[in-house]
Image (cartoon, rainbow, N blue to C red; front, side):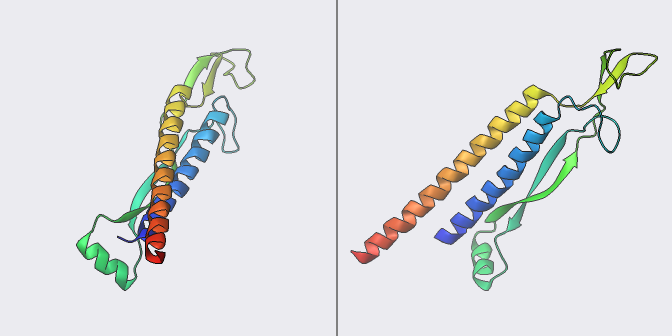
Length: 147
């Protein structure tokens, strides 16, 4: 594995976690949205990650023959949570059912989203640390070569 592979893997993870943080932020911002363009309450979204090979060059194919676990992180998609909306009794709400007074609220748990945000943030920090360590090793190697 070269320095560039380490940088490429860490940067792909940083980009993926940035997407995840944006989706979590959107979930939190819409935790009380009862009306969307599609109709009904906002549906919680989640990011699906997948691992992909680091590239298709001959050099990378040779490396993967010796280390098949060398993968980058890729955002495979953003999916909507299929859980039913929370039903809350609030007869004065403009979106309340006229007969029952129940309002369909988004299927978002603020506590769960905050835990997801902390997890994503820690993953982002870990990848930033790995990226900086790789840069430091490359700079040290360059300085040894000059010496």
